Length: 178
View 1 (cartoon, rainbow, N blue to C red):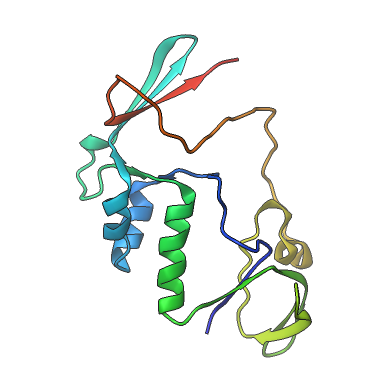
View 2 (view 1 turned 90 degrees about the vertical axis):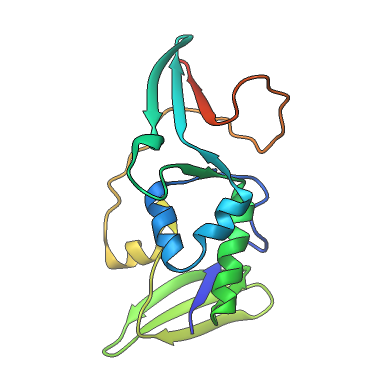
C-alpha cells in the first residue's frame, strides 16, 4: 500500500495551478484519468501573452499532431479530487494533518518518522520513500541534495472566479507588466 503524508487537513480551496499540459494529459490517459478531466475542464488551444499593452507571444497547441493538442484548465481542487479518488480506489491511503519530520536509511528499508495531529509520533518502515514536498524537502535535506532553483522577485495574482467577458473563450490571455 501507498501512504501520502500531507500537512494539510483538507484539500486546497484556492488554486496554485490551473492548467494540465499536453504531456500530463497523455500520462493521465494511460491510467484512465484524462477523460474525466476533459469532461469538466476548459479546453484551450491558444495562449496569448500581452506585454506593454500588445500581444507579445502566441502559443498554438492546435498545431500539435496529437490527440491532446490542448491544455486543460480547471480549478486545482477539481483536479486534486479526481486524483485522490483514483488513488484511494486503487488502495492508496491519505494521512491528512501529518508531517514527515525525520528519515533514516537502514540496510533493507527506510524509517520515516511522521508526526500527525491526534496520533502523535509514528515510525513507518518502508522499502521506498518518495519526497514530493517542494523546495523545503525534508527528504532532500536528509540526503543532502541541493535545490538549484531561484526565487524571482515577481508577484502573481491568480483567482478562481467567473467573469462577464465578451471576448473569445477558446484561448487564454496572459497579461504581464513591469
